Image (tube, rainbow, N blue to C red; front, side, top):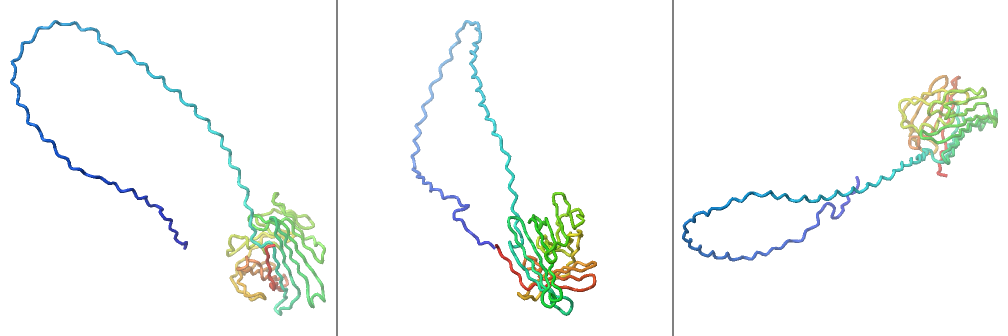
Length: 303
């Protein structure tokens, strides 16, 4: 509730000075007695009169009418310049200008740690760069050292992230999984075959889609996201599973749990108190093997 503010004198009429009047009694003058009536004289006989012929009636001389004053010229209205269109408002990025999330990668029900994933982003001048690097660690790295990196670059538009290029690399070399988004032409070119597909509104790539949920007006029972893997673009339907609280290394985090099922299954837990950032990701491949990425560190900054 807003505090009540009284403005002194608002709505009050200023007091008028008092009017003073003095009443002075006056005497009514005495009425003199009426004079006696004079005696009536006898009426005189009328004298004969000569008829006088009527003369012409006098006609008044016409008076000169004043000439109407000339109308003053109406000044022409100055042309009104059309208002200049207001410059488009800058889009405020929902994501902080920079951030870093580190995940531990766990395989199977035995919670066998096999690697780590690091997501990092930078936003400046309406553009973003987002990377996701997954690499084997510990005993898994001894058997097979693998690093897979995804990079997404683009703009921050009114609807959120608007990718322009997506590239996948394995051990430092491009895999051929690449997507070039042409928003003006409304198409995306993908893979070594340069396959062209129609680009639907809100399309994302294989790393940016994790950060697209925070820009949605709301996350309903289902969310359809067009996603390019760098080979082809498909629409993925995420179903809302429910709300859960995860016990993570940096505390208890309330989350929104979403799932997309098909030949493979992808699940994501979004932190509801941290701009819907992903804090847990699960992938179940065609063989049924499960890989969980669980956030162990989350840092955001303004510069």
